[in-house]
Image (cartoon, rainbow, N blue to C red; front, side, top):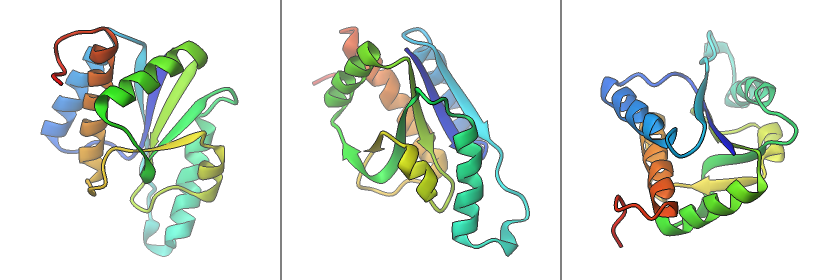
Length: 156
């Protein structure tokens, strides 16, 4: 199973970039993993929030294949404990060819992206910056991989 993270806008903080790169490299030892960055929209001052979400949504949808299993990282999504996420991921590995996680822009997802999604996943009930979510997500994906393999990274 190939796993892809689509994110809107590049990661800017050097510490975030370093952490995300580290976890992405670790994940790639367990499964094919790519991060695809959609450029931030330019000249958004004249666009409403809905127009921005629609424009970002079109760019996100262009990256998806019809057979993709799409999971939106959204505060209203389903919450898992790390062990539960690992079980969920293991089940997806048996049934999905491409698992695509999406982190939207600052205003969330367009209705078209929400309609296309198969699931929504929340990393926490807390609110994180988009930069932080990328790091937390890659760490949790790596943690799930180690749990599946029975490696000692996760302690419970």
